[in-house]
Length: 583
Image (spheres, rainbow, N blue to C red):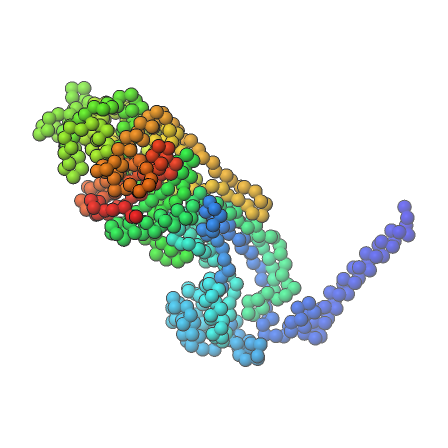
């Protein structure tokens, strides 16, 4: 061992330590004598440096939400909070007083640029702060997290004592954008951070929020950090980004069409969903009435129509009765029945049996809609004209109770779809009585959700394979450059065979034929299949069906020979007879 070398190393270390100590001591002595910080050059006697040590958290940047093409749906942007300085020793760079001396005048000036503030309340906040000898104060509602443009306008007005603190807020560049699905996030005063309040913003909180860090610094009177005093104890970890299956271009079309639906038909509710048949990916999702996600002060409906509203959808249920009959091998292809009205009772074995019209059975007579009487027609025509009696005949003389109940379960009705990160209702399977059993076949008595109906139809459009609809494609962490969670197309059942699905699709071609119920939904140049429906709305307050408002809807898919895209549009309105679909 070389003792001389070791001694030299120890001597060098001691010299470095002595130099550092000398610098620290010199800084302290210099500051005490000359009243200046060496590093910042600030005058320690300056009014703005009378300060305190601040320990605070650093909010993690909330993750962005994107559409399938990486267009921004929701992101975090800089914002500014107004602050008033009250210390009468504060001056600006010209040496002029730069504090609030007249609360009422200050409030009046701010009102010019912030029209939503309560002028009297702002003046009161300032008066109370002065009375309590505060050096600065924020000014309450309407003055927090304002846009950069507004901040710059106020700054140019040069209102004495008014400054700004850097802040953040959540922005939705194209709002309304599937507002009840995406939801919104806003600053929570109790938690002192941006939190998801509704929809995916709330359900994906654990991914979007990230993890806050912690810092310590010395704060000057005007709220700024004294240079050289910032210490980081724990780095903030930003939130994950979320990429959806939604296509912004399609979504913008849906938003416009639903607004027109509401306006033209005085509708209380309207919806439209566009789904990729072979994958279950949701390309557009609209639920009206909607709201401005940037200013969510008035939200007309907190329920998501697509998954949380249970409806009796009407005749869009009829293809599933046909599918049950075909798949069970009992469908009477090419045969005829008598439409108009259906009187029924129970036979000696307790089974439903059709009897002559006018017979008193104790059960309500079922009629075709609007008193129509198509006479003797085929079952194929029965679907095209949306005859309720065709369904009653099939469920009475061909399909039995257990078969129908089983196929309703196979198609996923009255069960959770389990779409990730979206709240759902289940609806109600109500087929115990003969009347409810028959009515369920044409979309009454039992209630379901729109998303259940969409999922079930994927089996018809996708050769028997039923796809779970989903809207979150992946969750991605930009810092580590890896996918946190990825969602893939999922077959959740095969309720019918491919052959059955093809036969039902062929029947649905007839629905779009000239003069049939779906004719009004035809689009030039596009060959479609579909089914329309009008459903009664149960009123819980009256204990009966509404006599004014009805559910009107249409399930459509294209191209007819091999569906790739399906659209389900609907509304609830009193205009159920002469409405026209939006162009």
